[in-house]
Length: 224
Image (cartoon, rainbow, N blue to C red; front, top):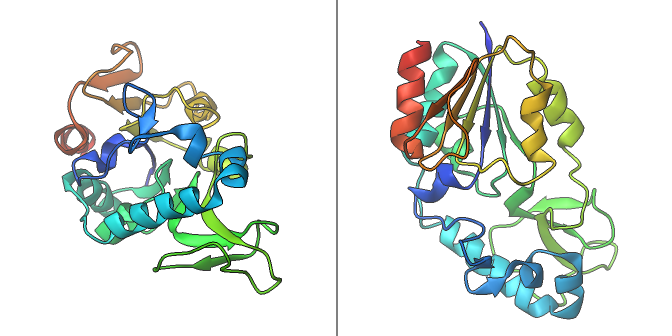
């Protein structure tokens, strides 16, 4: 089977009711993103940051995968599918996708604030004073602004082997993830699903101007 690589961003989960990471005003749930998504923000207001992610984790329990997630999972019937997501939710996995790489971490995991390799699953709230086994404060297992993206090398290796690249729900403005498209072969067709794309169809790039649910199904029909 051919290798289909699917790069997803916040837009793929929007129809499930999960708010996008940043709205037009540069805010996330009423907070400046640097307050809740940077090492500096965590150092300055750790309780605020922990509470913010506790609320995101609680919200995740109330939402379900949408048509886009299910359609992407269904593509495994005909393709060897790798999902590379910028999202920290687990909706791809819950829809049935078997190969999911999270570039920016996962809401349902926490880690030591000192040892980035000390990671554990977490379904409940974490608070100031909750420590890892080595005695360090636990923090969300989320890649914040200014931090390295540990999974990037693996993502590049996966993308470089793509026979087809499908991009859904991402503006292609957040690096280094936005640069992944540059690692596919020059002959690899690229499909971009975005209701308000900054690009137009050209050459091997096909732009589908739709929301994720409808757009992914359109691409699935095109490549079936």
